[in-house]
Image 1 (spheres, rainbow, N blue to C red):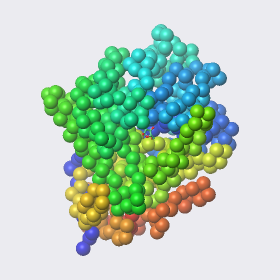
Image 2: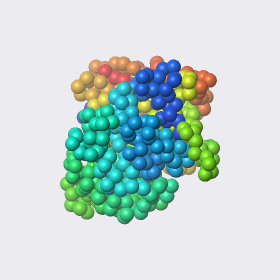
Image 3: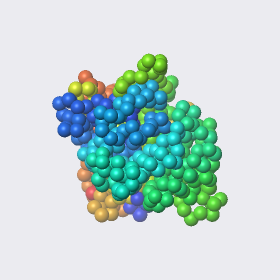
Image 4: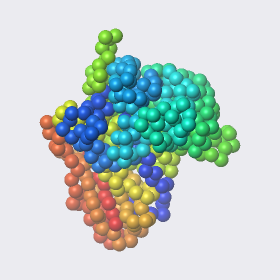
Length: 503
Ligand code: AHR
């Protein structure tokens, strides 16, 4: 008897996979920018000082839109500091990360880096310590063609064509007491509505993201979304979700089921948004921008990462440099499955973050860049998940977790691209002890073969890629994946993530 069964039916569509769900996030935080993406003098640095080894890895990762410049950083940020002649830019205290921001990299430089990696910009404005006017100024500087003070300033600074930023976040995590300028839902909803209306007076076609909750476990969760959307429903397109997961107190079983929490988070925000829409008798639908998600050992490293002291604001300190294990990558891959399972309502998502800071890519100053374990599920899913996400009729044994009760041992999603005829299926085995056999009915796909198989697993689930051993972990092809008479069978090792490409 197989352990789990599922059926792939290209007619059972959840929704189109919008490429923005494979987005990333770059914050001025720790060594993300400085010695992460930018390191003049590095052996691979290009003429602008960007590390080519990192550019190559970001391209291989397959990230779409990139959110910038924060994060908590944005709530204390003066965008004007980061444009104009570099030598004249002020050094500023960054209170969010207790660091010094040199402003060597700003909008122009970051935009040039985005061109090199082939990604679009998703800009966050400061609605923490600033307001509508400053957001409008940044919009004019970025997107106006010329002939006005700020657009002419951009042109004088060397950029004649507008940056034409299409997607804008109205602040960051405004529900969080740690946020500079943290507000109540009512206060934030009013400010976000004003800023959004004003920005739309410049360009009604901007895509605007209002801040939702920093986690589904915030004390204000649910009510925050209701109140904020009551103010902004007609003004914005998307509401954000942020979620970070970690193994707490050795409870690996619950950690492996983190995607259950993400599923619930998305579904509750959708329900709340649709409720507000119903109350307003609106035909409009608000979708989700899951613009911060990852595994992050906040509890484990909090003290290490906490800087303090009025004379201690270092430039680019090592912060949030989590090392990711095989176990972390399996949970991470499952979070991507959750995003795809909600492709009908998750229109955009940003892996937080990209380089050095809770990142799939690590660098050593003057040295190598390498892939963390989480690099693999992201790059493979981004490449193989094309077309539409499919609903699966999944039957799997369950196990009991302290955090989420009884949950399936297997989670999965499939995709199908009608243009190429290719499909893909992504699976995790959450069992810490048992391999699981999965039987997949693929008869609706016609004559197909397994084109690629990738399984990430290891006898040592704590194995990681490090500076000393950067290639310790990589996915291997799964030779158990075979198709016969419309049935695909595959064995999933304990604590594993698998991707199969079919066509
Ligand atoms: O990604 C790290 C931090 O997590 C971001 O700055 C903030 O938005 C969130 O709390």
